[in-house]
Image (cartoon, rainbow, N blue to C red; front, side, top):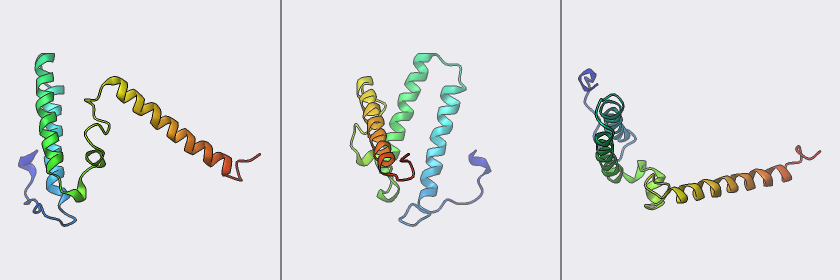
Length: 117
């Protein structure tokens, strides 16, 4: 909780410590999810509304991140695995990922001399 912090946060610059204030922001959003969604006694409709608000806040947070610490998902484009994608697109991405990893594993097994028996 914020009242337990007694040190100033580092500046939001391009140093290796720049991630700290951004992660504090992220932790505060996670706390909102915990308190306002999981530990609240509001209706499901209200929880969905709160979740959409927190998601919008998280999107704004990610867009403001410095390039140095930005997650790869933002570089992949808008449909790079987003939860808002249609169910069929998520399933297709999953299947293609499984096929890719099984192809890599099969290739490794066939070229690994220790595996040949």
